Amino acid sequence: MFYSLNSPNNTYKVELYRANGGATTSYTLRGEVSNNKNKESKNIYWGYDEEKDTVSWENNRTVTINGHTLDVEKDKYDFRRE
Image 1 (spheres, one colour):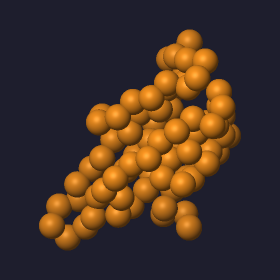
Image 2 (cartoon, helix red, strand yellow; image 1 turned 90 degrees about the horizontal axis):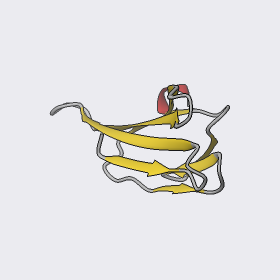
Image 3 (cartoon, rainbow, N blue to C red; image 1 turned 90 degrees about the vertical axis):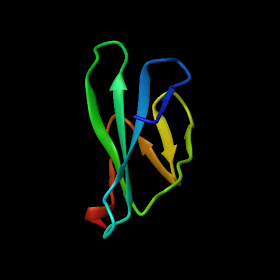
Image 4 (cartoon, rainbow, N blue to C red; image 1 turned 120 degrees about the horizontal axis):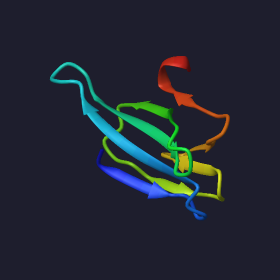
């Protein structure tokens, strides 16, 4: 993990992980959200060719990661599904 940010009311936490695919592929960025109350977690973001990160909470359950706005209770972004 290289970045972590709690939601405004501290119900959720987003953690970002960067993976280097080696010489033949670019960086990937994985975002995981966890519920601070029940400790459940799930992946909500998987981006490719992303060396930088921009994360902000829009409200208590909506987060924007690199321009992709996600409701952490129901949305996911995965570059492989585009």
